[in-house]
Length: 500
Ligand code: 5AD
Ligand code: SF4
Image: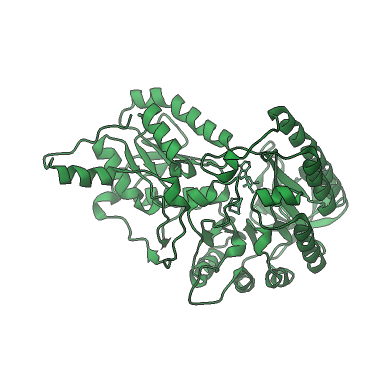
């Protein structure tokens, strides 16, 4: 059960209600689904109160991040805020004064992992009652999750939502002093908050949000509920951030949004879309620019035209298809057919002949027949993706697909996933094989994970390359000849250093 809220001396009914609402604002899926017409305000992060600035002096925090780049980037913001409060990061669970889980709700197994971790930490919290255990990110936006934590994980101290990150300083203070579970999750998105502090994890590659939320409501997906309605950042704010990253020496940026192709559609005062933004960023002196994720539905000709200008705009497009069958796509509410997707791919390939396409695919959507699944296999072959993220459909409470009739057995779904992965891996191997003997430009990111004598980097098309070379190459661009292509990596040898 929910913890009782203790209210101090002014324990009148109104004070209790006031304090209660301060400590306990829980999510509501119905509210989260609403899409209001009101304009989005852009507000500046109002900093951190003097009294909170030293709250974390001499103390440490540990962040565990699950899920997509949006979460990774949110964790950078959370780290930035905690840093401003005096906290320093640690990887040592036993040392940490705060342990925060930035969670993902996209599939059930992502959630199971977090519940497992929360359960595991029960004894640590018992040993260290002053430890603040927090949950944020997409899971905290789900009613069912918050209820489960309240009921079964009462040792959690703080739950805050994806729209409440800027409120962290106050919430943390409440969590520290109230000793009660502090829950603040706004179901409805708030404003676009600019100028939040950030501690970027990587000195070479940076994520830049261009928009928040999603209005697509694909029937299987929880994101429109956990991330709210589409809100674009103003172009001048995005451009200023990219310019600043370029000045700081970053080599690559990835523009982030759940559906970047909808960028700007919410502006009421200017006509400005994703193609326009890319055209502006193309002219900034930063060597590589990527974006993720695109929705095929909004991928327009202007954008293709701009991407074809190349330069710092890399020839890699992640274009989730989800299924190769038009009926399944309709049930998914993707709002395009197999033929329309293939036509888009044709146009992209015509404009950018060396483009590398990657995708996301779901198998075992409710009621998917063997024939429909085979359409996915044939589409994968027809497009010739270089790689794909493949998933078994996972029902998400509150989404339309979760109540659709499903007569496909779990074993059948697993089998389909395997068959799909076999095709995807074969294609990856073939695509990589075609690079044998070719010279590619690589941004050297560091030592290889498994062998410190080997360096690792990525091509413009985001393929991982391993090679031997001096450590001074880290952070620079070099030309590498591909000697031994494999399914997931390319082994090569250095040809020259590139000045970019
Ligand atoms: N089940 C399985 N996969 C899903 N995805 C989104 N929702 C679900 C779900 N309920 C996949 C989609 C999406 C990727 C980020 O995760 O393929 O593109
Ligand atoms: Fe989910 Fe569809 Fe939005 Fe992507 S476009 S986040 S799959 S609802």
